[in-house]
Length: 343
Image (cartoon, rainbow, N blue to C red; front, side, top):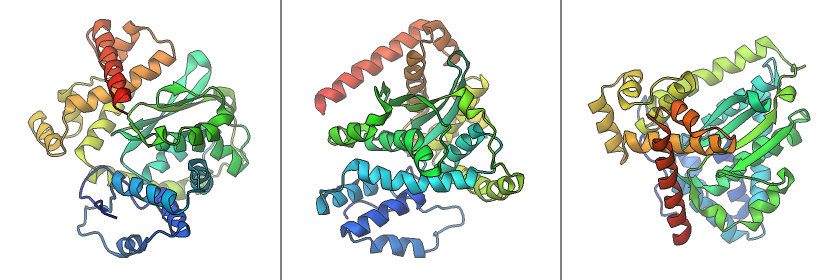
């Protein structure tokens, strides 16, 4: 494998449930995965450093699996990955009082896998629904969007026996999936397209009545035990994460709280001055404008699906007026056309 397996303080994959599951599938297909065992047996080189593997490693591993065993389809990998993951995520979250809390907790715990993306749980009062959004912090392969959609639209209910998760809508890479049961067919029919990267949002929408139901397995003691294990790890990783990731997460927090999305406001919340944050982001080959524009584009796409007016979008996204929103959307659409033409 020619790609760099580990990168220091960068966006990538932690050796969590997703990567471990993928390694198991690769080993069964005949891949050499001794390197992973060696990495897992080593201690991190510094007190504040995490083992992080690049997206290129994961993509290379998936390509090697397909090369050695062409009979393994993307949907097969997704099913084998999301089944055990869904079971373990719900098991860790099963002490929560409602199905909504279980789902929110399961999404948060999934962040132990990677810092390439995040999740946002939101209420959609006008639709009497709740939604979990998958938000890439860097362009990721479309098969990751499909894994997210499969896990939260199908995997949780199929593998855990929780049948009350009524799914109203599935959005993959900014586009709705006509039939939720067609996720397998969509994945395999579009296997080539699934390799393209995409930073658009994906989302699963649930009927609120279902998620507001009381969890009959709720257990405060179990909830406290799992939170005491997961919360410190998530907090530690946030402190050592790349500044691109930290900036995006703070922009998301400001958005949810209705605060300014300006660089001054976000850098202040991060405990850094503007020039320091600019220097850190430049060292990661990006800038604050790119990060906040990515976030705004993602939220604008979801708002358009929900029928939000341009004036409301401008207010929520901290723009001066609706013309700025329309300009941003035009630029995004023109970039998408160029990418499609190249692909």
